[in-house]
Length: 461
Ligand code: NDP
Ligand code: 2IT
Image (cartoon, rainbow, N blue to C red; front, side):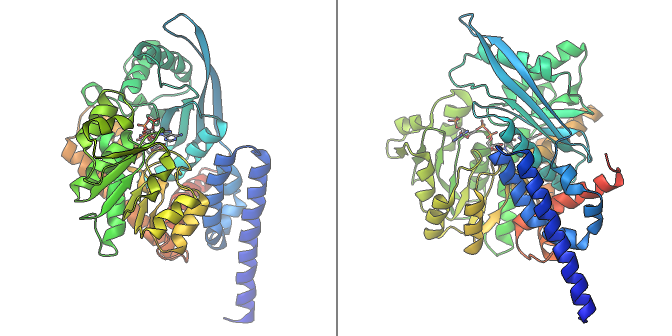
């Protein structure tokens, strides 16, 4: 390189660094108390420096400033009456973050911890995840600080209907298409869909995804996130001549994502020895009895400790974070954000873990991710690894538009192709931007490029 070339490169590097710093400071100033949102933006910003060196046009178009500010946030009151006639008020949200690639798309979460920071981090992650699927969907998320635990079925129905009455003003098959997330499954989506159609006086099949396959849903959607996570991790393992066969696996949580991650890992020959709920975890060294977990969690709505009633040889422990102290080859955090911190990461590394796959959204803290990377543990980040759920949601939208249904085999084949494709895009982007093998950087860059190009093409708005 000549002296001039070196100084030009240094100039570009400095400009890219300054840009990322300046915008991150702005985001911090504008959202001072939103720690989850700042954590999610931080991870993306850290990955994007090499992009701005190669693409100064993104700086000129103010892409980072624009992509970190939601297009719209809707916050609303949800009043409902319990079985005793007492009135309650919860807070509902829909964050419509970015629509440059398609209608806003993302789940609805009912959990007492829901607040503006959690909604924004989830919607922000969804922009890049949805871009990675290659399907025409923008990024959004919604929910309420409602706790479904201890509520009767009728209370959940009334709450969900009240929530939807307000939400219905802002959504539609070509505008914003919600789905499930924590605390929202097929039953709640059914109540939302019913209420929406009642209010609109029609039948708009494509307004929600995750519907019952007997009533407009896609086969394979319930399984898609968990299966997809395992397909993605399998790709990562295959690249190192490894596989799930004979591996010991831990999966946190025992909800929708966890159950189907366990199922696919078992189908691929792994032994899953532990899973959890928000109270504690079970450890069954003989291998988890998944039919029993499904019965307890999907049918009877019970706590995970009840597993030990049928399997007294299994252990139950109350401190759910200690699930990561069990020796395993592969860990799949599938419960919630920041459930796997640096201490947990140390325990996993000390026990010789070879791969981590994020089934939940942002389950590992930034410090935990750094530690895994330092120790060369294979790491599949959420926005790539758990994109199978929203990918099959987009397939549900296609089926609804065409008024037809694909077979479960057809959906699964497409899901596998999407996960392989996401893996290849991450590896390719990581390589092209100077971080070979780093799937965190690869996923962030590959997702970002798609959205940024669309934002440039659509002009400044
Ligand atoms: P579910 O409500 O079906 O299950 C959630 C599980 O996580 C339950 O076992 C729950 O335990 C546990 N959990 C929830 N909150 C906490 C908490 N604060 N601390 C500890 N454990 C907790 O949700 P999903 O399986 O749908 O979602 C799990 C994760 O996957 C979330 O991060 C979600 O955003 C993400 N995800 C979901 C997708 C989907 O298609 N559903 C798609 C992509 C990502 P308990 O029953 O005790 O509350
Ligand atoms: O986090 C997620 O990707 C979801 N909760 C699923 C979103 C969807 O629209 O299927």
